[in-house]
Length: 397
Ligand SMILES: Nc1ncnc2c1ncn2[C@@H]1O[C@H](COP(=O)(O)OP(=O)(O)OP(=O)(O)O)[C@@H](O)[C@H]1O
Ligand SMILES: [Mg+2]
Image (cartoon, rainbow, N blue to C red; front, side):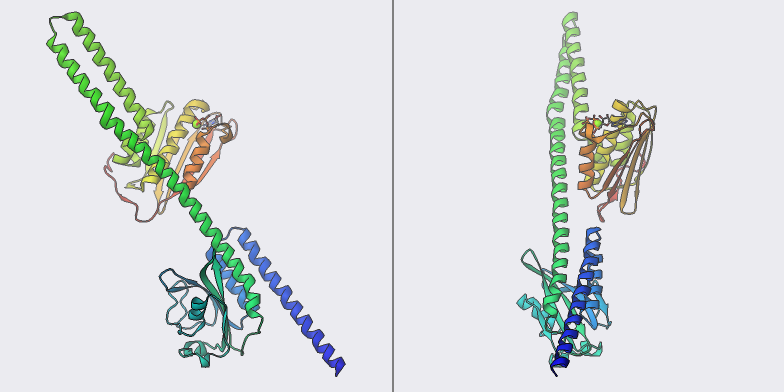
């Protein structure tokens, strides 16, 4: 009997070791997925599959607790029933079931027999008998839970403890996604705060200094007319008025550099065409943007084209620059290509680096392709948030 006992213990230990090794393989697979930067939704699906393979003999799910007290089923594997709708509200769960119990206690919970749970019939009909759920805490807040269910009697007593490694993994993925989203939002806030300040300066210049200069010119012209008998004084006053008109032009040019009024008034298409007209290098331009886009997106694209055209004039020795912009679906694509000397290197200045920052802050992508001797192509893609578009002020422009 001792020998038989020892053999049994040995077999059990071997089985435990095999399970442990299996769990490690599962966790490594998931870690690789996370390291590859897969989106959280894909990780939830993969975790659910692995958890079912490891612990469940029926179902596995990832559920999120929302701030408004509802719950959402994020991923589900195994037996399906009418109550299972992935991506939707996880409603109708029994008040003494696992979803409600984990929400109340913030701790792991188990049901050894759904016959004992009032309202547990849908689970029994789906072939389940027992289940275990383990909470997912993100930054000290109960974020959700992973549940596994079995149709073959109660789950082993160490299931809760073993599942913790999987809930920790999900918590890390969610925390990372939150941090990334917060960082993106902070960068976008910085960009829009500086745009707002530039717009204020532009409008102060326009409504303040420029207007006063314009009325000064008018007054000078009146004085000049009134002093027609003093030829020399009249000429002098007219010269001063002409000088002042030049100052206004300079001021207008300056405020356009600070914030282009045409962009806010008329939209991207006319603003880019105005940039092309003023470019020192000839520009072939094709803008297929017929609706107004969110302000930050228009400003991002405008700044990009403005800086790249300036670069082409300063550094490229190009004979022509092509500017293409197209809003297609939820993306604005901008590409500027010159036929100059190439060899652009963002490290040597601040223009291209600043652009990359601005575009990425808007969730976009930015790339420079500039082999020596073969011209320079700069491409940007900007996501256009839904609901941000409204008809162009002047589509005919
Ligand atoms: N179209 C281009 N053709 C050739 N070289 C370029 C081109 N654009 C940029 N470069 C090179 O890459 C460097 C970096 O460009 P970037 O715009 O970042 O800085 P910059 O134009 O020198 O200065 P800043 O934009 O800060 O006024 C430039 O100094 C230049 O040497
Ligand atoms: Mg530059």
